[in-house]
Image 1 (spheres, helix red, strand yellow):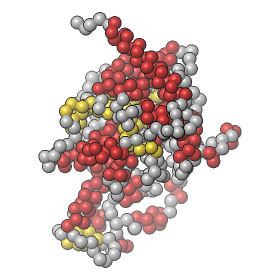
Image 2: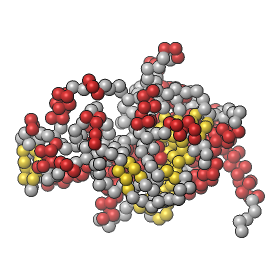
Image 3: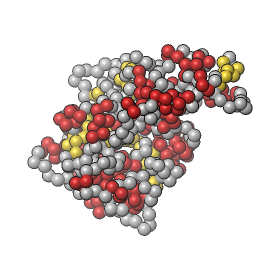
Image 4: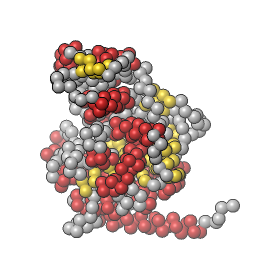
Length: 495
């Protein structure tokens, strides 16, 4: 077992299923109402239409979710969200307890859409490989109908109607409190959230944007876009930013500066995979490992002169997967990058080309043809045997306070929407301490895949108007709010 030695906050979250959503709903609503901001993440069955059967008659040319024109991109994104489904929604509420201090409540809503929808076989494989329990989703997923307008279709099962109504009310509660919403690379999260629980996505992207301004008047913050603007030149995928934020806050605390203090409400046993990367549930490119040419692997690795995988460090994935002989451990990568930054700031760059390292303050040359990770590590005074290697990594665990057997809280977390939502919120809180009001200048700018410099701007246009869906659903939210107010006013005072 390889252990990176990272002292990471355990992923404490509550699994919300069809069996306990009625019991947990009031608690979820309470934490939403008390939160300073709310972070979300979702998992879904597709980011694009891939290899659809000809029997469907889809015009796949219109499903380009990376189109340069925003109207074309929205049309494709809307088509995907309407034909695929959410399988889980992560919700992380940051409740303030002092200056830069929060109690954090994480909820992982397991979902099961009742409309017939598309699922790519590769997506099912991805889910299973990342610890997602498909059997549990089938038996315990919260059942809902996508695209309610303004109320969902009546089901023969009263239980399904109640489940669908409650999960919709979770979104309604987020809208009612008018608090900032935080996402990471969240354009599809917003589209799926709207289509699943608010109503049918509007026909035009202008109306979609107009609706979002009314749904979240305090603004939507995308930590991927913010990081690329405020910390240029660094990797911006979720796991990297989270671990970097942890380190930044630890350094600030050690230096006596104001720093983020997060307290998770219940401490549990947390088992994490070696690499916790932000990955939407989408088909991976087909790759037959038996066809990978070992010479090509060696040739690519020779061009890397560092003990960690530079491609993984930059983008959060590696074309060689478990065949890569360099580390994919994010904390080890950050250790190396900090050492590199410190050394580059104290010594001028060498004029000669080629890889080299320093030992006892002196440069030590490493020949290109012999530039193997173990030789570089030795020169850096790092024991090669202690370096995390991606293909040998196993889940590690943090000893934590045990809970009762009757607890609804999950004690094991692999790749979950709840933990991704927590990491997103942690990054946002960390950036707010470091950059203050600069974040307000970057709100309502949502990262676009393949067009990072051209975000989606969430702002009402003088030439657009709210959609029919928006008017119908906001009216419903107001009616529900008024009903709840009447019930609260008639309830007898507590003893």
